[in-house]
Image (tube, rainbow over all chains, first blue to last red; front, side, top):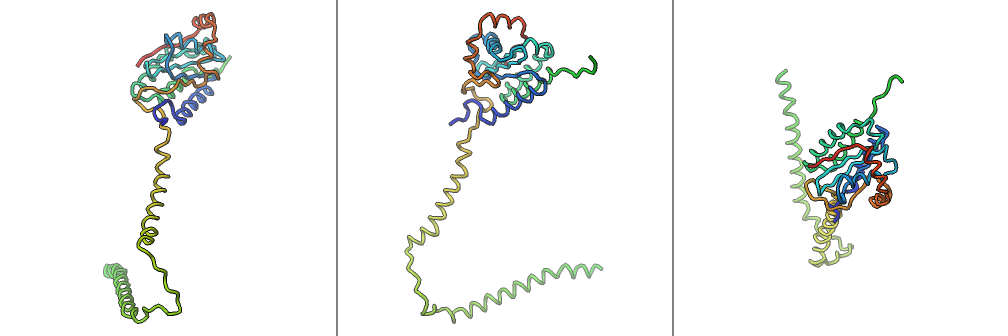
Amino acid sequence: MAGGEGFSSDQQTEIDRAIRSAETSCRFEFSVYVGPAEGESHAFAQRLHASLSAPDRSVLVVVDPSARLIEVITGSVVRRSLTDDAVRLAVAGMESSFAAGDLVGGIKHGVAQLAESARQPATLHE
Amino acid sequence: MITHDTARRHRPARALAAGILSALALVLAGGVLAPASADTPSAWESAPDVSPLGFLLVLVIFPLGIAAVVTILAVLPSLASDRGYEPGESWRGDAEWFGGPARGVRAADDVAPEQIEASRASTGGTSGRW
């Protein structure tokens, strides 16, 4: 019985769709890791982020449901438009969703909020 | 005007009563007439004998069996469906990486320590707990 072990295919599709729409809206790469963080969580997240294909332009969200922790790593280019304060706000939203038991919803909204904050305002003049 | 309306309102009831009466008359007439023509014509083949078991089989067991099969077919998919992670339960699934490298977490093992050190200085982000 697959129930209760990891995400169902519907849930995976939902998260995939959230990531894709985030990427199209802000033109940065998004990646979400859900699972146990090996060793120290921040170092683990850094390692995963560095292994992405374009780390500078990537946002990595690490969610460890058993240790109940979140790590968000923003690349050096993303960081210019997505400030750490904005990330902190999105993480706070995710924390409250996760605390309510809504893992999939929290990830979806968190990713969407990060993308919304990372979206550069259209420049009307050069 | 008012009397005209009430008259119209009574008409369907009257028609219904007439219908019931005529239907009853027909049934009674049939009941009276039927015994006269009850005999099977001798030219007809005699009906085959049906054992009580055959009767039960066709009229009770087959329909119940078909109903049971249909019920099982309808219920089975929802029982076996993949419900996925449910709120509040502990995470027992494997690690999943959406939008990560094709090799998954093992790709992170190949990252050189200097590379991580370099990215640590330039990356941003935050941590949280719940």
